[in-house]
Length: 585
Image (cartoon, rainbow, N blue to C red; front, side, top):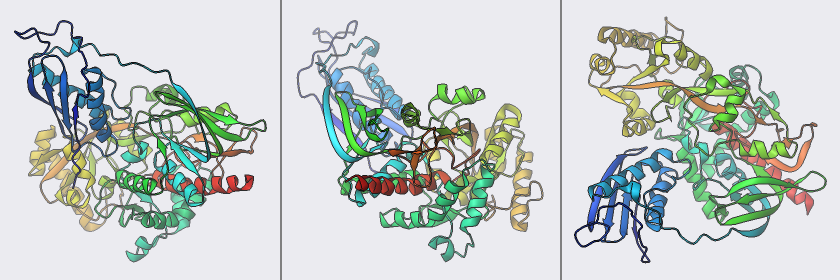
């Protein structure tokens, strides 16, 4: 059941409204008193705003958006109306990382005002008394920078090892890019695989990962990740996040991508469990707090960070620092420095993923690797920047171009599939699938709720709706269905993700093209998650996990290994930082 997000805000104090040019009513009041409604399309569905006005002020704002992403768009639903009420204007900054939801909320509230005859462009904000930021010093064992999957995992392990740990997060919510992960987590030799008679090995996992990364990966890191992957799956089950369903992913020999039993997106599922455990373990998370500098002692050891929020400047003294700030996929200036050809591409990253940890660490002498290795994901819906999970193809979808024909094995590595889409006329394609896949993969519901899926009762009708030749698409689907029945793709040699054909209506299509997705480069680390300096030595007290690190994925990350990476190396960073801290006592 979806949680319904609604916030009703009432004015606690008499705030005046400077509304130059707003049409007054007959009594000379600034507003026509009453209650007005407006709607707008959010990230997950319709957002509704109800605004109550008295003659002179905004009395109440109610915003509902029950389909906005938990922990991202939902935060905007909760926070933006409060800002509007406090300042008595619609012109407020959106919630960082929740751009679509923030924009929809502002649009919905604006629509309500327009129905009241109010020109929102002329509403001047009531200025609140701004206080000068105060300084505060905190003393902890371990500070974790970033409340994404890697950061929360590291914090939980550090806490379990007896550390006094805090997390600082520059967004208003936890999860980071992890919240947007929809596929699953690769792992080998797991209990789930064995129960389903999937014969997989760590060595095969290593081989696939190295091949997917064109052997540019650091094999020691890859092997460590693969060896610990099964234990990581067990740990997730222990903290209330079991991944018991299996599917194929591009670049994998076997069914290896583990996901929630109901087929829902893995990221939101894990973030919910991480947050629950963070709360239960009473680990403080400082939201809207941006780390700006790593503190070091006279020997070069990391001994804390400096950070800032709207009203605080923090000095956080710590015996160990864990960086889990993500990559730089939302920093176009930085990634186009390494790959100019990516200028103008949409990105699947949340807006806070701008390379902060990499920048701070290099300022104290950390080394970086593979910075030029930047992955574009092949299936991104361009108007929403919404990534369509690899599991759609892994569960049997096909890709067709604007001529209605397939153009390759849909489960090749991401870079290869992306390149093949770019080569097609107008550089886009359609994912085609049926009701069988929708019933099996809950993640599809999100795409339908976002209004990016075309639906039809027959393949021919679907073709007509998306502007393809009806006979050609019908032939393409029939040929594919025969390949599934024969277990042989004579056209392109696809041999995975062929458990179901495309034969049960309704039928579905999503128009996609590539988008910037993952930055494989970052800080150099070793198998202990210690950050390595430019002179080749571990920087004492500094650890890192997740996409802030380089070397694990080489020239291309195969689908499902990002979650493996954050959980395995998040756990290692937390325990290694704890061991280091204990050694200082």
